[in-house]
Picture 1 (cartoon, helix red, strand yellow):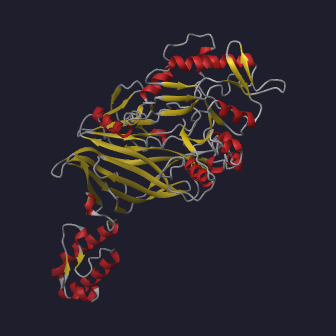
Picture 2 (cartoon, helix red, strand yellow; picture 1 turned 180 degrees about the horizontal axis):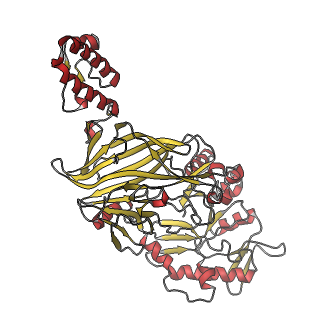
Picture 3 (cartoon, one colour; picture 1 turned 135 degrees about the vertical axis):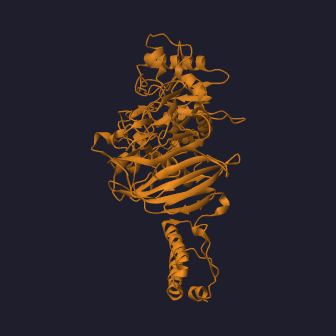
Length: 591
């Protein structure tokens, strides 16, 4: 039996409570083309029976338009999200845990704010936290230098802001939407985003069981050799907030009363979060904690949030949001990769809370454990490759040496128990003169011993640039005095009257011998990028690499690519390759 025959028998059921209630009793198919067939047949009956059926046809037409405007065919209701469509409005609720529900009312009308209402509460009563907000994005597009000698897309040594670049407000022409389920997530997609050569859609992800949602402009370009940055946030033409709050770098909550005409401010914060407070509660807006930071040589707080009117000279209205400084650390500034035809997720998170900004911030901090590594029973947390240069810049410089340097406090607060240094990477005398080198090593060993205690261990280490090729890290389980050069008339090992045993290294064979004698380890620093581009591949067949003294490589989030679900695909690929080489190698975390 066809749909038309079935319809002619008047076995179509119409429920005016919602568009997803229009059902064909034969196949329960919700696709718009099937509904159009049904509507056409209904119209024939109307022409035969007269005006008495007009209102049913009108209601059916409205329902059909809603179905075409918002596609809910991929929504699985058992994940807890519910969708109701009324004209151009899409009312979505989801479970937020603790017997609560979140609510977004989206307005697809052109010229109206997308977020008509954002609320939190229960099934019976919602408190509105914010209203009249639009998601807004600034996409900054630059040129990536792609050279196989520099690592191709794995490049770090790129200075993108020193080449021409331009910032674009992402235009958003909303016309339709879809709501689908992805496991416990509910995903709302609204096409119609465009900036420069990029095209894409807005994607809002609701997390079942949490008052958290993610807002992303998912953008694609066909242009090659592209590097990008993005700024983003929520903006309004009318006053949406009473107060703006953030934690300063000393972990003290700061609050300012909203004056809608205040020009935008680039705000230095702790926990990467800016909070808007309304009458019904607070919305904490924060950046993806790790993904948002492209690699730099040094770590600085570059004021990664903003609030106020007309941010960047492009944002329309008053808002709160996240930002990047295009100049970065003013050395090598590679930005994010944006290879052709990859889905770049320019995204930020929002967390809702019915309480104060302080309470909302505490909820945000739970996602990163307050920016501290959680202790694991039976294990210590270690990080490697830190060029503190404390020995040369403080200890041997003739200035007062603090009893507890600031860097030790920072590591302890972060929950790091063991820190492996990479000293004398520039400063110092790794190759001699011998007395200078030995004095520097002695000072390094003394400081590491003095700054270590029952909770914190500071390990001496270096990043040599010779013998093996590329850059690599050295580690010894005890203080070892060694000089990275040996003249033909000097012995491999000798005794010094003050410092004891001293090794002099002249080549890779002697370096391997030293590691074997002293139970040391070596591993490739930032493999396949920076000054280790082409390594360890170039020496994978060497005895020193195949030796147990060569541990493997180090993990670092280079490059950055917003289209990837994981960080540092470069290292994940390397781990696969080292295993396929038939070698048991490991990767250690480095800064």
